Length: 250
Image (cartoon, rainbow, N blue to C red; front, side, top):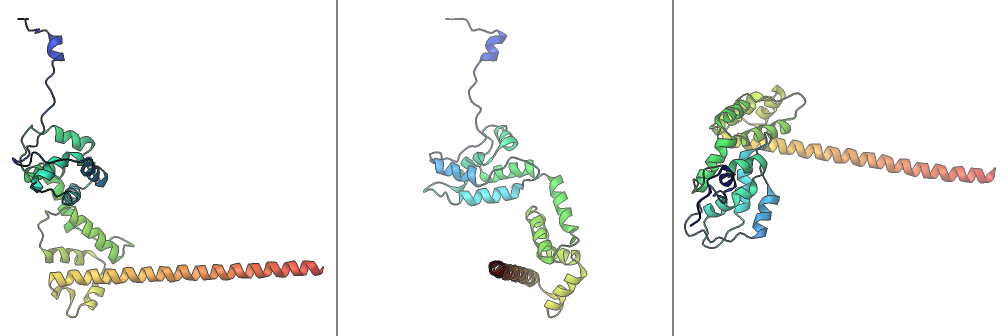
């Protein structure tokens, strides 16, 4: 029997095999078939690299939405999500996933928590919550733009813990006086006397009507400019014809 080579070179060159995945597919779902089309839907749909301008909550939401279209007979949602999640990660995020303790994740809830612990830690959550409670409409920002921006901030922190009425009153106190007056006038008994769902609908309605008005005004303006251009073009053609006739008489 050959003696084992215990040299440093031999130990450095020793092959240990591929690192085991952190994910353990639930029993009964291990035979799930992964097709190229499934992978393409994930990689071409929405990926996450861990950059500071990326939203981990939005990534999870889109990822789950894509996986919901991949239903397979006798295969659980957990199995699909666990098996496909690594394909949605790039760069640093992929490196993070590969370095999770092997065979330590057995449910989608565990993987989701690990992902948010990494990319939405408590310090970032507190920062997002502060952005919500200190929201202010900026100069030259319409109510529609302010409402859209505010909803975007809320979406980036779904764990803010604020009740619906609190979310509405923060916006109301953060917008300019003229827009608060407009909302008060649009409500019969005062905006703050409304229940949260009705107040939300009123804001949406006002923003929708404002957007439609701006769009119609822009179309009319563009139409007016096109009409002016058309008339000017006709006048130029007439002038050119008259000039040519006068030239013929000379």
